[in-house]
Image 1 (tube, rainbow, N blue to C red):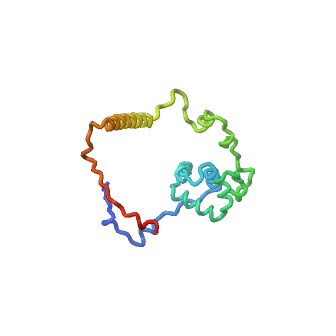
Image 2: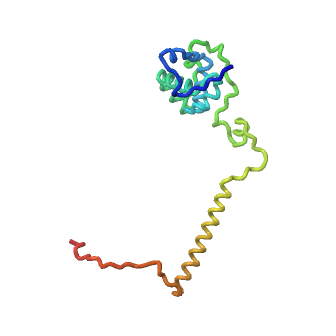
Amino acid sequence: MEIVEEHDSTRLVNSLTWSKKIRGERWSAEETALFFDAVRMFGSDFEMITQLFPGRNRKQIRLKWIKEEKKAPQIMTDMMMGRQPPSRASVTPSVPEEEIEEDTEIIRLESLNTFEEYAKWVGIDCTGPIPEDPMDKWREKERLEDLEMRKANEVGSKKGDDGDEDDEDEEVIEEEVDTSHWGQ
């Protein structure tokens, strides 16, 4: 087997190159219903929706979104806002409702009362100690540095009050400003 490396400068492109592109598969009624469920759950997060469709990429999901938004913008808006559960009859008009099996395990987030219920539903293990926040160490370091700076400033200001130190570095320049014309 010969391995050929292609670069933009060596790749030959002509009109036949783009005509070889394979068209994506059509969306079945089940996939469309699943797409609407995903829109209701994830909104416009195409990456999350893509994970539900193993044979499709993000671009195909985005194109489906655009197509459905043009075809039925109110349905898409209602799905995103969570106002309307997907009506299987409007989503899949070619399949009779008797053939569509209703999902009994769909849980609305509003019905979950505690974090433990949500974690169990999502599949997060919440047993054991709460992990330490990595930002806590940084915040403590910043707090200590700020405290040291304040102490250093207090010590520095007390030395200046004694009158022992001479401020040779700071030079005060006083200029006379003619303010007689300001009130005019």
